[in-house]
Length: 335
Ligand code: LMR
Picture (cartoon, rainbow, N blue to C red):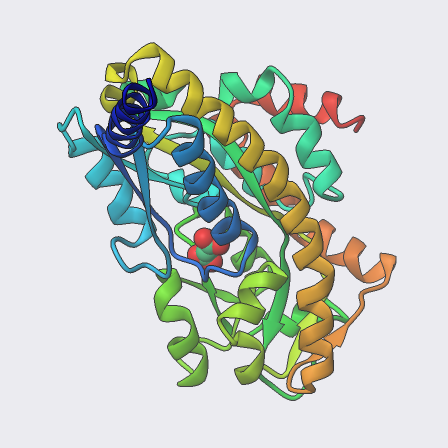
């Protein structure tokens, strides 16, 4: 009897361990930021949760810091990938979908959101599906939105960007691949320059550009604050991410696996919102304490001047993004 139970226990352990390590699907999760950021932490947590929930059937391999792809390349790789067992996932910022979606460009409209709470109103509403539906025809499947935070402007020079939009005159600013951001900088009086994220630090350090716009966690984790003199708390637009996967890989997953991965993503998304709120305060404080760039608050009047200067951007992109969509978002946000 004792023998039999020992045999049974041994058999159970063997079967159990085979089940636990029978890796059937690998998902390469590529991102460009540091691990200790809202996106980096959410991606690592997602990998852990997927491992648990699928009992090891799905392995998420996370590649931070542009190790595997930059954001533009990853979208192409995702669209071209044909494998049914190895998928590509990423969370590029919403601004980086410029080639694939007109509707998503609404996220970059200056001063559309007062704060991240406003963003959640939109992201958690049915309007979000309307904004991402079109990605299917481009070979992409949108899964969720992750936060970073509101963007602020940094600059190297003898005065902060503050008093009036004239402070932008003659200055070059690194931006993401967004045409809306490009127009915004031009209307503020500066010169926009699109650059991949991994080139930003060097471009700032070598004076290729004078300034940039980003959320606190990126300015901190990539040390932009060490090579900038001022950071103006402009909160002029939102930096957030669309988590996407190859459409065909996703629809080819067995239903139970897809449900488990979806559940993991839901939990990671809730955690991401906490990570982002934490980083927003903590990373700003660390930058202030470090004593390199000086953090400068903006008054309502100063913000108003920037808002006025950038208002034509809305008109310029209204038809492209969709007038009805912009009106519906404005209504949702109580404007
Ligand atoms: C940027 O390029 O500035 C950001 O999109 C980087 C990121 O992913 O937060």
